Length: 216
Image (cartoon, rainbow, N blue to C red; front, side, top):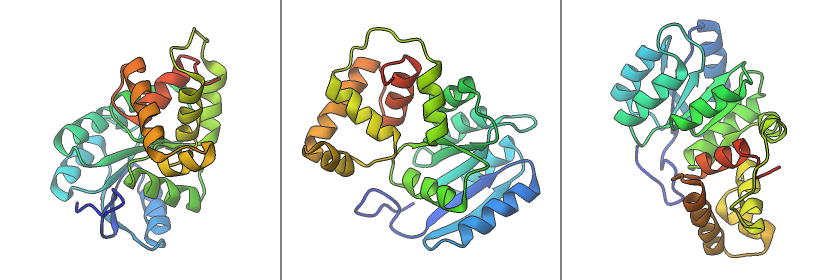
């Protein structure tokens, strides 16, 4: 799991797929293997197997089905990240239930992607997660915006702007360009947001802010 200068893997992004349907795994594998710079290093048919494979293979990214028999994707996420902390986990599922999104993020998932996503969206999600960025489909982000009760926000207007752009998948440098500020200023706003929200990373900050209605 060597790191490149940009913060992601220096070689091909190594991906582990976990889904209890072989046809789904093969479909995801075919789409990812067709992309330059991504290689599928293993497949698992259950949450338990995903944990074993992740420890053995130490992938950069693990794509996990949310609903599997036995250990589900959320529990597997927690176990994988405890044992392979450098791995980024992205939940891939047909379900859009908000509580499941939040459970996955609370367990440490880098994001959430629908199985109906296009090939390019899947590839973009893997590349985004490999860079340490948030993976969240626009429809899911919108659903969270609409469904949460608004409470007074501890975040400043600029902090909310930054988190909205993080939720769109922008990097710190891209956010700086969008807001006409330096990348260091973006990082400062993020760190302040983390403290106010009681979180330690950008994904959790976006999801917590959405859940509490601060980004609506």
